[in-house]
Amino acid sequence: MRFMILLKASADSEAGAMPEEPLIAAMADYHEQLAQAGVLLDASGLQPSAKGWRIRYEGGRRQVIDGPFAETQELIAGYTLIQVRSREEALDWTRRFPAPHGDTVRGEIEVRQVYELDDFGPSESMARFRKIDLGHPQAAT
Image (cartoon, one colour):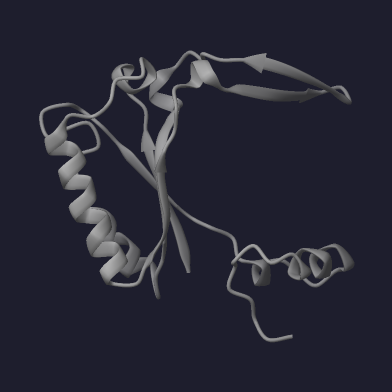
């Protein structure tokens, strides 16, 4: 089971401010523990939304919308992807996640389970996805 830990953005992260050293150290400690346990798949911070864009799909058309985006609390500043045996194990790991913007600043993470290819029914299109090696765990065929 894979879970994505989504780190919510703050005004500072959207301004491009780098975390202070104590927070970087806490994040390094946490991610080292994940790696030593063999559950860490990937982790990274995201640049501010001012450097990004969105594609809006409407009426059969695509529209490019350049950042920055409003509603900072709805934006993602980083992620950690883990693979564990159960929801309970994922919950245990995420309870240990360092305060995302420091101990004295309000912050939030969101955790979502990632769909696996086997969660979808069999079809020609899903067979095509199974042929693409994305590092996903795949069931024996």
